[in-house]
Image (cartoon, rainbow, N blue to C red; front, side, top):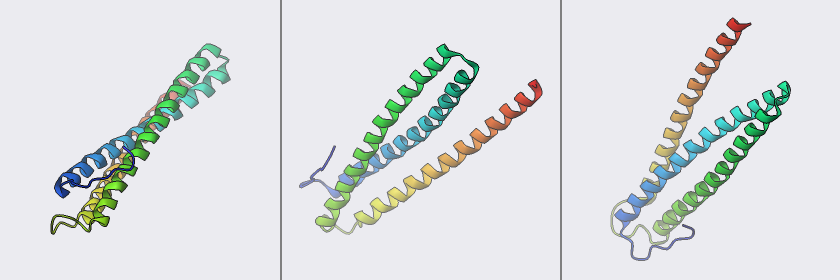
Length: 146
């Protein structure tokens, strides 16, 4: 990826490519959110194991947490690369004053980004609701066991 140049690229091809980049960006961001939630679970497990004196379980939980953090770092780098590549495509259209016709490519790219952000927010909202529901179930289960 990186700073790309598209001297002979067809505008429609670039727009299609930008669409695939935006979809990849959306998937990467969803995976980052998922891993952040998993990380929080393992942090709680580390705390619980420490509290109960379960050194072996605490060590295993730390290893899982470290693995998740490594995955998060890798995904953050992928996210940066995707954003950079999308920025390069937008710059190409701006510099070349929308080569090839009447299509307002910059507006289209902006719309694709907005759509992507809306999908991310919707997905995140549902995931939060699902997590709240699971938490409520767990609380009820803990209350009945006490």
